[in-house]
Length: 110
Image (cartoon, rainbow, N blue to C red):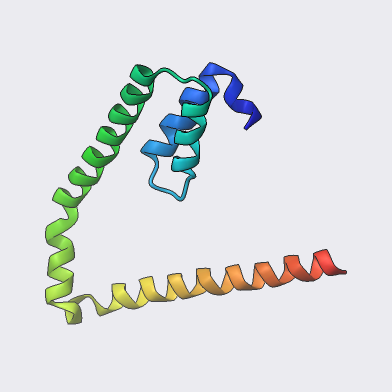
C-alpha cells in the first residue's frame, strides 16, 4: 500500500482498523506495519489503546442495553411491533442492495 509510506497515515490506518468493528483488513495492516519497519513499541501502543477503547465502549453499551435485550427475548409478544419493524427494515435493506447490485451489473454490461 503506497499510502503506508507516510507515518501519519500508517498510524491512522492501524488505529482505525483496530478500533472500528466494521470489516477492515486488520491482519493485512498488521503485516504491512511489520514489513515497513514500523516500531514495535508504537505498534503495540496503538493496538492496545484502540482495542481497549473499542471493547470498553462495547462493554458500556452491553451494560446499558443488556437488560432491555434480555427483556425482549423473554417477552417477545410485548415487543412484536418493534420486532416486525426491524425485520421489515432489514428485509428492505437487503432488497435494496440486491436491486442496486443488479442495476450496476446491467450498467457495466451495457
